[in-house]
Every structure is written in C-alpha cells, then in structure tokens.
Length: 277
Image (cartoon, rainbow, N blue to C red; front, side, top):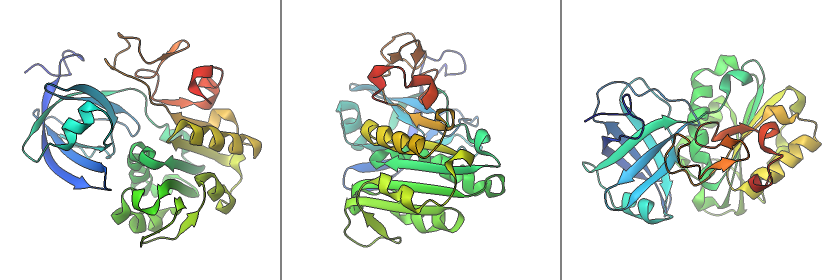
C-alpha cells in the first residue's frame, strides 16, 4: 500500500497493539504502522486516524518518538470517529496519515525555565514534551507542569505522575479533589498553581494546551506577570479534515492550524478574534 511518504492524502494501515484505560472516558491506544520504517514525529504534532465506515479525525501524538514504527494517541469519547475508535481491541486496524503540523519548540526552551500548563485532555499533547524534558533534563533549568481537571479522577496518566515529579515539579489542581493520587491535588483552577512557581517569567518559556478559556486566562496571567507573548505557546484545536491545508476548514486569518500549528506562539495568533485568545 502506498503510504504517507508518497502521498500525504493516502493512508496506511496501523494496528492496535495495546489499549490502556486512563479514565472512565479516556483511552490510550498504542499503534504500530504496517511499514517497519521508524516513524519520526515531534512532540505537539498530530496524525489523522480513520475508522472505516465512520470517518477520520485528528489526534495529537501522546508518546515520544522512540525510533521504531509505534506511536500512541490518547483519546476521549466525543464524536462518531472516537466512539468507533473506543470499540477497537488489540489486533484491529485503523487508517493512519501523518505526522502533520508544527510541534512544541522545545529547543527554544533549552537553557531556560519551562512551564507547561495543561487542562483536561490537553495533557495528552504535552505528555511527549514532558518525556522529552525528562530524557534531556540537563538542557533545561527549572521545569514545572501545572495540570488541572474537573475532578481528581479525570487526571490522566496517574501511574506516571510520581516518576515525572522526580525530574520536574508537578503541580495538580481540580475543582473537586477526591480519591487517592500519588501527588497532592490543590482545590481550584489550574491558574492558581502559578502561585507556586517561584521562577521569573521573563526567563521562561510556557507551553499550554487545554480548553481555550483556560489557555486564555493562563496567557493573561503570564502576560500580567511580565512574560512576553513570543514566549507563550498554545496548541489549538480546529476542524482539520485533510492535514495539508487543502480543505481550508482550519484556517485562522492567514494561517492554517494543520500546517502552521497546531502549536502557535501567542504573538502570532492573538490578533485573530476566533482564537478566543
């Protein structure tokens, strides 16, 4: 089968190797491509996953590329494609295209402080950035992960939090803290966690992903504290159908989320009203 290397609109098969229930409505799927060639992708990029008879949808990679032909997506039940995806078991196949888009500019944070701010399912696109930092810890100064959810039970990757906290500072928040997690969960919005970050934002790069209202208030707080809008990066969600700018559904101003994003510097998009930022 002709693959992405020849035509970005032509999918190849990917096999479900493993499924892991993260929460009541979120599952991580580990896939392997039919092609044995290594799949190179950057934290923050995405692929298009198709389920025959149900369509195709974009998903950010939630794993760090490890030099083989496997990759992971973490998906929450929402829409027909994801409902069909959630029914899949190891051994089933999907259509795969990618990788697409621009990822997190991790090199820009080398030698500086890094703050990652996640809300809900927005932790999934940031997970590979966390793993990159842990793998290359000496390239960064202080690193903080601020992660908020509606309830403690909705916090993703709970089995990994303690390991992450050994290399970076992980701060958690929930509207309704409950249950037992390996780390303390503060009551309230994720933006409250900025009070526990003792580094000057003028020497910091920030990545944020989650509900747009959360990113809006996080960015406003950071700018108020003195961070430059060129050092704040957001990951946007839009209706992406092709992944290569042809359909135009993801256009904001002169930019395309599928090509120029999904990760943007705040300075590049804040003038566009439909970003809500």
